Image (cartoon, rainbow, N blue to C red; front, side):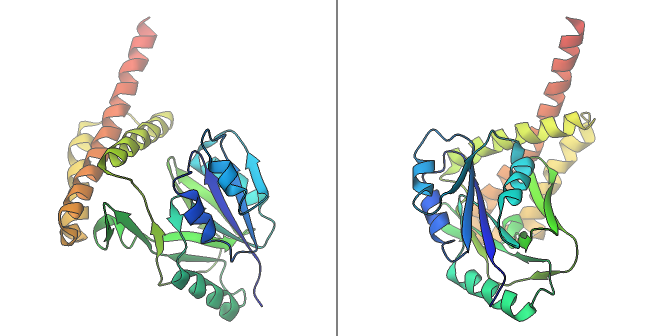
Length: 257
């Protein structure tokens, strides 16, 4: 026997992915969904797998994660994104670990493997992208800086070997659209915390991001996809700092007017 698990998924207009995600979670003891008023068929598809569906205004990734954690009924919480899938190998490793460890660990992390333009990415910053997604409800909560939330757990954490699968972008257009959205959120978050534009960050941080992903972490081994990922990641960093500068310009304009 093992402690029960609540699988928790936050959604908004995810009809293209949600069935694959929830189908891979049917082994859990309950599935909880918080939807931010989707305008597509997401909620109807979710109802095929669970009646634990709540509608709630978007509170950011961190706020939404902590809200759904509180809704979970069972001692263990498993976070998945709507565009992720729990493969059989990881499922079996989790079940075995919970039985063997008998509560010695308060959380479990595992790598995440990304499927990008028809191929699994096995190097660079995208792999292994370690994620702590399974934890005791009373020992963990979501923290971080929007839009990049992470789970912080009190106590020991074990690392598993099998990867979670992530179907992150439909195509390059979708990738760039997400970069634009995330860089806006990230820039606003940094600006709200008092950060102000610095040329040294704008010039050197994107360059280091490319060097880290493509050379240091061997992104070049993923071929053209590895090059595109490193370039787009570098561009995302530059865009974030450019948008901080834009916010400062808007503030000066507002103060003058």
